[in-house]
Length: 389
Ligand code: NAD
Ligand code: UDP
Image (cartoon, rainbow, N blue to C red; front, side):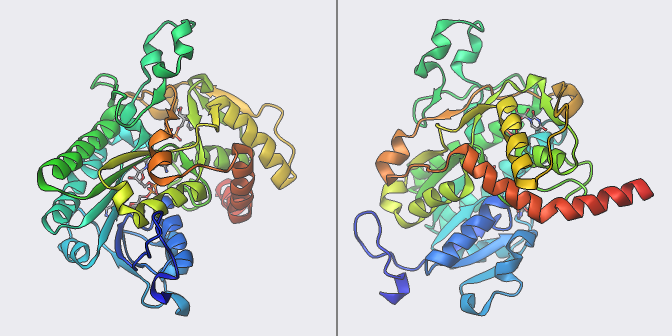
């Protein structure tokens, strides 16, 4: 039918147009999800956020072909009575709202815990009370450290998959001590996951929990001093992009030995799209969403970004493009790190047939091309103003 744009779910049934209350729609993931839903579906989005810079092209004002499809609701879910009404109007709520930059976890642990647990509570409650489906965004960080990380450095068992691969329904959650406030985020996310799971078990809440593994791409975070605070510390993609744009060395925290798997935002959004349109396959599950083939150490990521940026910008790399900093210098007291994050993909593959596609090199090319085009001139202007004053 025209209403569903001829879309069918994985079982061949037509997909009826949904009204989706998307909280945190103005962020990195939200902006890509809004674009996807507008371009490829007939769903209606109620976009909730405290700001809309990243979806301005969709909502301020909505272009004529999207009229009636997307509306922006500027509100803080901490303290706004309009929230319940929006959830009631929708068939499905997707909650992306969170403080989710590591630099905040140890320096603003209260805001981090409130944002990721307390402020998410009413969303869960309204969904449960009104029998509305919820897709909640958690994090791969709920796994914490790998079991293998507690073995001696060169122990052979460290190479065995069962000592590092992270499985939704089997792996434990391993956090550091309370004084390592880094884990305030993971712990708050773990507790909201447990609450949602319990609402499912005791009150039949229909839920899906997403654990993103380092989704990256255009519009992630901010460039300090350009579209964010000059003292702000975003996640690693934006930190390294900022260094490259300013022609300063990339900073490797504690040697850059931690390992991460990076997935291209557009691949990951496909997975969310499948969850939205296949509730029977997605409900009651927690899904890893990542790309196990794109594993690098942070040092290797830095080296790749230096090489790719040189090609994209035509500027030769610095003679000394990397410098070491301690975690304490970079993040302050209470920082700690996840050592390695390899998502097990069995469940999402079985339930939704999803697989990531884009190799790291390709996604860095696309992303750094975007960073260069979007920010190079603004960074130059900002740097010349800073030296003039
Ligand atoms: P983001 O910071 O770009 O987006 C979060 C959005 O939520 C922001 O636009 C922010 O303004 C909004 N928000 C926060 N508090 C709010 C409030 N009280 N009221 C209204 N709006 C509020 O982050 P993102 O990368 O898009 O992440 C989205 C979700 O995915 C988060 O829950 C995060 O924990 C999770 N996640 C993301 C990644 C990743 O790889 N990007 C990894 C792990 C987890
Ligand atoms: N990191 C780094 N230099 C930077 C920013 C981050 O070495 O300028 C490291 C950080 O210590 C961590 C990894 O990069 O080991 C990924 O950090 P990110 O902030 O993206 O989030 P995480 O994956 O830890 O949630």
